[in-house]
Structures are given as C-alpha cells and as structure tokens.
Length: 193
Image (cartoon, rainbow, N blue to C red):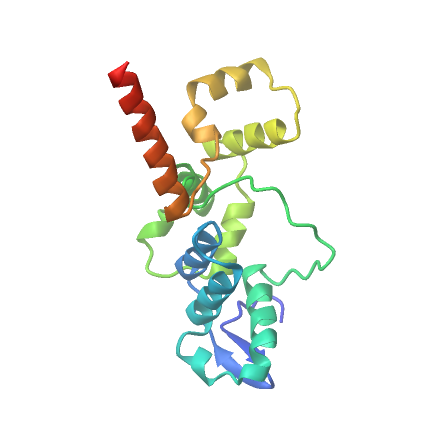
C-alpha cells in the first residue's frame, strides 16, 4: 500500500514481524564486507537479525522464500532481478564518519541519536545525499574505478584525503596474520642490515 512502511513479511502464507530499524540492516550490510564470513554466514545473519525470534519458527522448506522477502526488504521494495552487482563504492564501517553527517544533513537531525528509524526511511535519506564530503569521495572513487580523469580540484582533494578516498582492503584473520608476519620479517631484516 502506498505510504506504508513494512513491519512484517509473508513467508509460506504466514505473516512474520520483522526488526525494521536501520541499525539492524546496517549490521547485516557490515557483515557482507567481512572477509571472514561466508555468503551463507552473511545470509544467516540477515535472516536472524530481520526475523529475530520468528526465524526459528520458519519451516526449513520456506527459508528460500524468507531470504527472498528479506532481500526485498533490504532493497527497499525494489525487485530489479536483471541488475548486475555493482562494484564496491563504499564501506559502511570505513565511511561511517563521513556518511552520517551527510545522512543527518538530509534528515535534518542526528539520526544516530533517535531511538528508531525505519530502514526504508534511512535508505531514503541516504539516496538523497547531494553535496558534501561523502558525495565528493564517492564521485572520486567512481571516476577512479572507471579510469576517468579527475578534475584539478578532485586531484587536490584526493591527494590531501587519500585515507578517506581509498577503500581499504579487508583481510581474513589468517591473511592478516601472514601479512603481519612478513612485515615483521622485513622490518627485522632491515634492522639486521
């Protein structure tokens, strides 16, 4: 129905209440960027976070439908099946310091201080972000990803704000341990030289 924010999803003909606060969905989206979690682990997080106690009542044969409904909710009701996965342009954790000021500007309030905001409302604020640091960073990332030349001011911004503009690669614990091991060996060999 027009103007209604969903608070439940129908799975196997049964209506299940869902946790609709934006923070709940951000936990799932953050998990999607965790290299230590498998896709199955990430989807389980989504189902358990969204359906909460109701997750254990969903019959196994309806878990696929529950997942489709959850995806529909996270995608704010959009059902573009043809859509190719987009290249990663942002990281919810890394970009948090520049993301929330942009969302707050659109919302006209400090969204983190409000006890509840429906995910679709938060996503609407996010989609309306126009000018500011966050949009500048995304624009630079997009141009660099597509191999487009940066404007002079963008080059200056990038040079002065590399840590904001470059998405950091996240490693599994094992990968990070190996990187740390080789860094330590390299440091030791330099000291011995």
